[in-house]
Amino acid sequence: MSDATTSLTRGQRLAALFAFGVITTSAAALAVEPGSAAPARVVTGKVVRPAGPAWVDHAVFYQIYPQTFFDSNGDGVGDLPGITAKLDYVKSLGVSAIWLNPFVDSPFRDAGYDASDFYMVAPRYGTNEDARRLFAEAHKRGMRVIFDYVISYTSIDHPWFKASCDPKPNKYSNWFVWTNGTWYAGWDLPKNRAGFIQGYCERDAQYLSNFFWHQPALNFGYAHPDPASPWQLPTNHPDVLALKEELKNMLRFWLDMGADGFRADMAGSLVKNDDGNETSKFWKELRELMDREYPGRFMVSEWSDPKAATAGGFHADFLHWFQGYDDLFQKEAKRRFGNDGHSFFDVEGLGDISHFLKIYLDQYDGSRARGYVALPFSNHDLTRIKNNGRTDRDIEVIFAFALTMPGTPFVYYGEEIGMRQLDNLPHTEGSYGGRAGDRTPMQWTSGVNRGFSSASPERLYRAVDTAADAPNVAAQEQDLSSLLNKAKALIRLHNDEPALAAYAEFVPVYAQKDKYPFAFVRANGKDRLLVVLNPAGREASATFPLTYASQKPALIAGSGSATLAAQDVTVKLPGASYAVFRVNATR
Ligand code: NOJ
Image 1 (spheres, protein in one colour):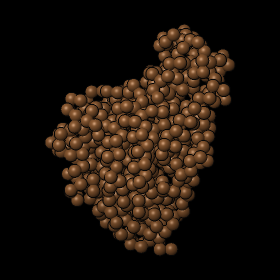
Image 2 (cartoon, protein in one colour):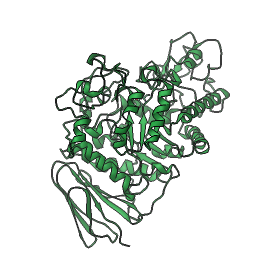
Image 3 (cartoon, rainbow, N blue to C red):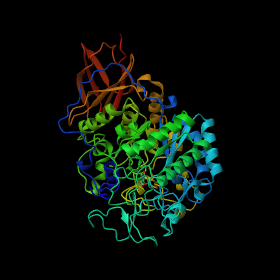
Image 4 (cartoon, helix red, strand yellow):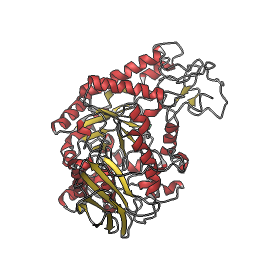
């Protein structure tokens, strides 16, 4: 098969296309064969706890985008001292860990996902000493910090790539994927040229990019090198091995400084022409390294294939680059890209949880013995959930869902106060496709620049939400009925309930095509919770069996009723609401 067509993994190609809104239909669905019947599920209370750090069992992560969280020096851009200054706020949310988006030096053509120095904090964010202090201050408050480990490519400004561009062979010549000639046509031009960049520098060759054209792929080798294309190096080529050692050292550098683990960017895209196995081998080596040298640290991937990612040693994997994810919260938001359809978490009540669930369960079942599914509500690539007219009440239902599902929840900064997706902002630093509108500055107060920065508004990294009703932290902290306080209560619930441990059993008990509500049981031994979600704007009720002896369901969060008759439960929920009932086993 042609090298170029298969040089990125399927998941990776889909992720890239999804990010740009190119794929908007079920073509991107993670495949679950049509007709594959969901196995019958009963609540047993039996749990399988995957190997990994105990602090993750009930952890909630908070994702911070450094450039837009808090600007401590008034230059218009958020920075690391700014994050440190806000750690008490982060702690007050009840979260146990922070994921920091990239903070190393970069030309910022992809907002820092394009490193030019893997070992140095970008001056706009501060210094390495600021990073060390941030880690230490988080630890003092009992929180962990993971960093973004972006190793599938560098920026074109990285000294390794500059050296690799040199026609004279040197240590870095093979650290990136280069063909044998600029006019190399060993494959069917132009059909298969995607990703190969011609004419960039003096070296008479094309380099393979791994995302934007200016992000040349680091060379992890080819799983099945084509003998007719000798530039395709095997995964055990000495230069590939040398690169991998250097990347391990870079990991040690940040872990030694105090980071508690990492989020691996585009984790499935390292080895080319791979069915996943060779890429997994590398990550497994890293897991062994972590277990041996840094026990208790955590690794989560951006792979969107938890089965593959946990087989590769990850403790958790983000599952969001698939069409079923849109079915949850994002479809309406994407209508402007020509998408149609409805999401389940919307008052119009026209969504379908069953499509999402089928794909989710396939991944959950196939990974739960080894690790967790992380199902973000949104992030710096996705639309904020406050879109399409959603209210705080609707957002609360989404929080209830995200904090009661299995695995490790991640809250993107600002979602806890209901920050809005802003439309029609100019693209900067590669924020195409709506990404500009979900990366706006954190809203701390109702004052100038919403308390994000003391710079004049035109100097801000990105415009703040200036609407009169833009939510802010200061106001919501004072208001007991605010989304912020409701989100905190749900985070506490997640932290405290044994049945909400990341590994606790998950059994959907009511999930009908095109119907509301959605109900599931989480169970950990005799501790059991029945979670019912009704995002639709109208009342919803359902009757289903709970096939173990239980005490009368007791409402512990949300609103609604549940009655038990023989072994059937009937639940009734008002519009746009959720309910969590204790349904512990009595034997
Ligand atoms: C995934 C990151 O989340 C995204 O922001 C970035 O643009 C791509 N990887 C490429 O680095």
